[in-house]
Length: 382
Image (tube, rainbow, N blue to C red; front, side):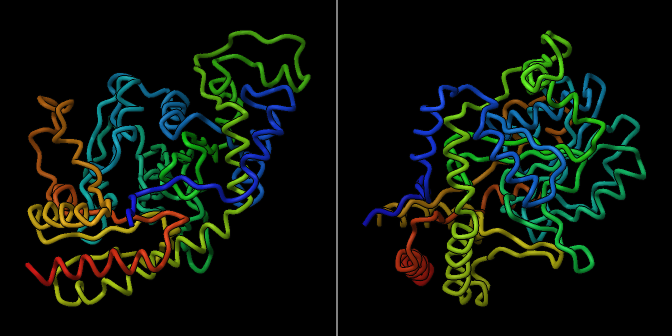
C-alpha cells in the first residue's frame, strides 16, 4: 500500500459550505465565510484583529508593508526556514540577517539574537518550526529593549501555545504581528491560504487598507463612508469565498483533527524511541515552554548519506519521506551577499540530516507501524 507524505482531506462540511458560498451570489473575497473564519480565531484565541489572505507569504508581505520596511533596514530571520520568511522583507529592500538554529531544535537560537542586533535592525521574525514555540518572552524583552518589531511566522503553529508561568498563550498572539498558513500540508488547510494577525492596535486600520488593495473599501461596505478610494499602498491579498468556505469547514473540526495528529505523532515517538536511545537517530525535542500541535514529525539522521539511503529505501516500499529546508545563506540568491561567507553549523546540520515522515489526518496507526518497522529494518541492516 502506497503511503504519501501528505494527503488533503475533507473533515466536515467543506463541500456544503462551498455550495452555500456559491448560492449566496458572492464568491469574491471578504464575504460571509471570510468573516466567520476571522471571528473563529478572534473568539477562540483572543486575537485582536485577523485578516484572511491567499497565503502565509501574503500575510508576511503585508507585515513588511505595515512596518514600513525599506532599504537600509535589517531584519533578523532564522537561517533554517522557508524562503517566504525572508523574501517578504527582501521585496521591501531590507537586508536579511540570518540566525542559526538551536542545537536541540531547528528553530532559531534565541541566545544568538542580541549579538545580531545593530542600529539598523527593525524587526525579528521568529518561526515556530513544527509548531514548537520559540522563546517568545526572551524575544519580546529584546524587542522592547531595542525598540524592534516582532512578526511571528506561525505557518506551522495553529493551535500551538507558549507556556508562560502556568498560562497558555496562543502562538501568533504574542508578537506585534503574526502570519499563519493554511496550505494543504498544514493541520488546517484550504489548499492555499493564510492569515495576518494584528496584535498591535496601532496597525489595525492600515492593515485593512493594505489588505483591500490600498483602498478603504471595507469601510465603504460597512457603511462608514459614502465612497471608497485609493488611500495607501496595498495589493490583492484577499482569498475567495470558496477558499474561506472550505477553511471554515475544517475549522469546525479543529479539535478532532488535532487529536488525531497528536496521536499519530506520539505513536511515532513510541515506535522510534529505541533508535534514539541507541544513539542512532535524533527525535523532536520540545522546550518546557512549548505546547506543540502535532504539525509534523521528523527524525535527525546520523549524516546525509544515511538520510539519502533511508529515503530511497522507504521510496522502494512506496513510502514517501522528504527532507525540508536548505540553509538560506547557502542559496543561489544569497551568493555574494554578506551572509554567504558565514557559518551556520546547526542550520546546516538540519539541512543535511532532517527527514520528515508522513503525517496527515487520514493516516492510520497501522500505517505508522509500517513506517516505523521499515525504518527499524533499514537501521538494523546498516
